[in-house]
Length: 253
Ligand SMILES: O=C1O[C@H](COP(=O)(O)O)[C@@H](O)[C@H](O)[C@H]1O
Image (cartoon, rainbow, N blue to C red; front, side, top):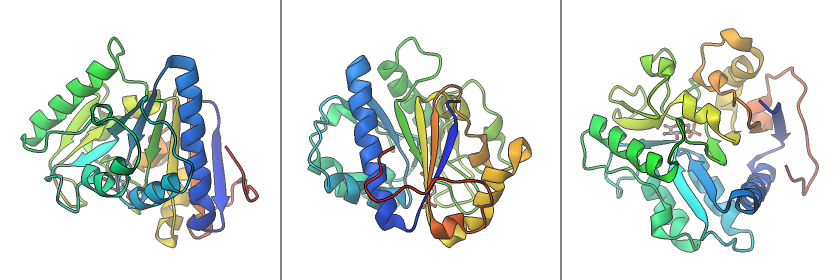
């Protein structure tokens, strides 16, 4: 790992613009180095923050972006639980990303087939790689310490071969989902968690200060050689005792 950076902001209002700049800077770097930018998105609270903040910046050229989903709920795209559906209504039509650059699940398939189908789509985009190496994965963390659709105590935490796995007993609704596995998450060039709000404070302390024995899935995100950022706000950071960065206004990561 290139070193973990825990960066704390007074609130989402200060965090959001830094997140958007990080996405743009990693996109520019990736396109300059290998001609495209591969980005994995999460759902939940990230969707509205990212959409709002990216749209507040001068329009980037997204024609060389390829977007996948770190996890997705197996519901139709017009269901309010669909992560793709939310980005479709809040972000995608407003940026110039080609439709072919967005890797969606086929939500009409049974969950196991849906995971296989999505894994095939990823393999086509990352030919020859045992595990896809995304330029940037944006992750959230639930108050139970889950990330992607990798939940505490679930057997999927031990998956070492599949790049995408089905889950049909998600403790957080909806129960049927597909998720990237840890080998994919940890292969990324940059992984960035965004975690805000006081409901995350207790678990965040365990995840960031609990060491290798931590039972929380988010603590297992340790990129092999990539960067790891935790962007959090003061309420989420309330219980932390580790040293953190507190950037000033206009900071860029
Ligand atoms: O169910 C999910 O939850 C996590 C965390 O969401 P948050 O709203 O607590 O930030 C999210 O990262 C994941 O993509 C989603 O499917």
